Image (tube, rainbow over all chains, first blue to last red):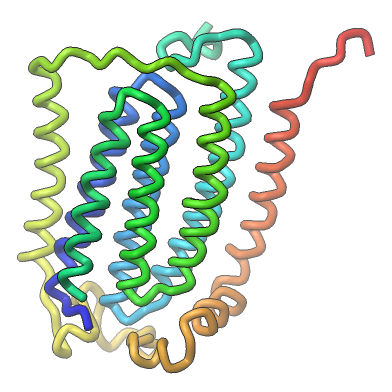
Length: 103
Length: 185
């Protein structure tokens, strides 16, 4: 049986994964890797939600984590569709090159 | 069990580093598979069996297969890694700083009561939700899927219904974005 001693470590892991994902979104230029870093951030949020739910004796954390998973799946579908469209236009997969909306 | 949780958390952290630092996109994807599986094991150890199954099926299964498929289709070349200079230290300091800050705050700023069963003292103990408490033993006796579904279809029925709309919009959006333009029709 887990005790509450592990709770700060779980929150620390969550913060580590989230900040690492945020750093990855900022430093990587491949949009596919940027998407993977967003997935990393969403999973960090899920870890925190489930940990809070477990140690607050509540099920709400799991429900919200479930919703986050659904939203992440929908986001991946649309994001990868955008990426195939970019590829079909013959553009290089690089977030620095993709500035059509800026012009 | 605590030792297992420690090992799994360590593996999750290392593979999360692999996602961000790999030069090849495919290596990032494979590291992410490891991270998601380890997060699933953390869910299992935290008494969330339903989320464990959902995480394995949807994330490690569907989403990552989609990622690997797109990587194989688009075949992006490896990035040249930016030089390790003073800006790298900003990133390292930010990640380490946020992690340590959250850990120290959680370690020292949260008080526990009821022998830790009730958990963090964020709200009042006498709040109405205290009567709707779900201690792990009671949840395991009733079944994790049963309790999650019981809440999902009663208290959280509106978010659940909105989810179906979201999935419909995502499907229509994907079809719209990837459709082929027919000139002259």
